[in-house]
Length: 186
Image (cartoon, rainbow, N blue to C red; front, top):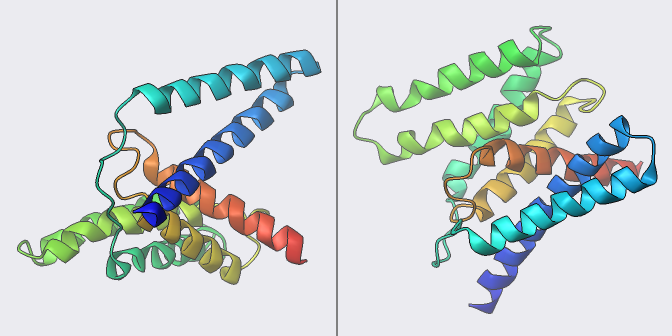
């Protein structure tokens, strides 16, 4: 039980850190003074903390997504990356193609519970593949970021229920983590 609580805390802390960092960077880009940045960051942090504390966003039980479903996150990332960067279609069209094709998978066998779970994981991976060539410099990077997003996707099965943007947030966390690891290793 302690392991599950630690994983849940790590997942929520990662998402919280990612959101605060990203939103602070946006504020920093638009305002010149440090006072505005500090005030905006505090408001953002307080809003997220109170939202987490007082909203029922999580199930009480601990469940993780199956590996057989999570493996499709990096596949979606690679497919979208190939259409986006080398294919030259751009992020929106590449995402649309991968997401639309994924949405038809449950139609192949309407009785299959497994196929019903795949569109969300592929769609999460497609968010990773939307990254620009500057952010995602290679296919290996897209695969690594998709794998990290898959791990976040796996751990967040019972977290952030009913919150819009969960798949994009998991993809963003995967890309940010891969970028940080890439910067530290290179």
